[in-house]
Image 1 (cartoon, rainbow, N blue to C red):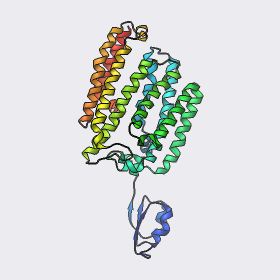
Image 2: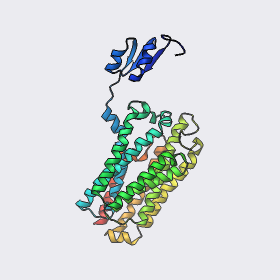
Image 3: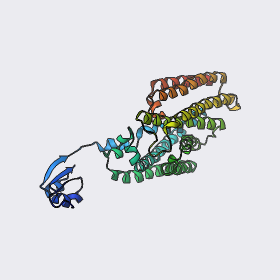
Image 4: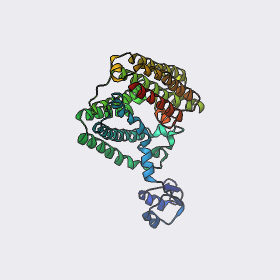
Length: 343
């Protein structure tokens, strides 16, 4: 050491630090093992923590984000084909998608360590906070990928596996490149949401309506923009000018607000046009009732944008929706209308 033996204090958390501690004036040890305690006698301070590792792993793989994968079940519900075997396949598909999505979440957190630590909320993520050792990532990623691939190959059609691999490559490209490109990142997020619908359709061999695909792209584009909008709003409150690891500036807030609200309302227009298609008359006995859904969709979309504008939105609108009582009420009413139109 440039300070000489006994001329410095040293803090560490590994047995590899033992030889440095022995030369230090004071050894400050983080979570020491028995080996460390028995090897050095100049410990001046000890920091020990007993975190719940399983709980941290669940948080790291973002099980709460699996709510997005319920989109896999939408095609079978919209086609009115509630068959047990198909439903079982979709359960397998749900977990296969969830595992591979979690693998990419872990990878993404490794890539985003620096920017997450600078973020007011993301700094509390297990890796960014330091609560979960990074070494766990090198076990979680291959295990989750292996589980997803094996589950899909053993239980699901090859078409689903192809969609799964496409999803993996797109979301990995997002983590490494696309998330850093403005506009491209939100388009990619919208595509990734829509791919979940495609995965559900190919799993049970149900053709997806072009109307439904168009509707999903526009509404998910709106939600992806909303995600960026809330991040910028948080930065504005902190008097920062640019996102860390993203190519957006606080001055983009108004533009994103216009893009997001217009895209959301365009999805409602597409839904209204879909109600005039032959597919609707084939599936529903009273299709005219479906027009009652339109004001509820308009209410829900405009409401979440109001929430975001007022700073009351979670970083991820899908997660917010999963915890929002009003959203549950709206979706319940829409479900009742759909059932009524089917009778």
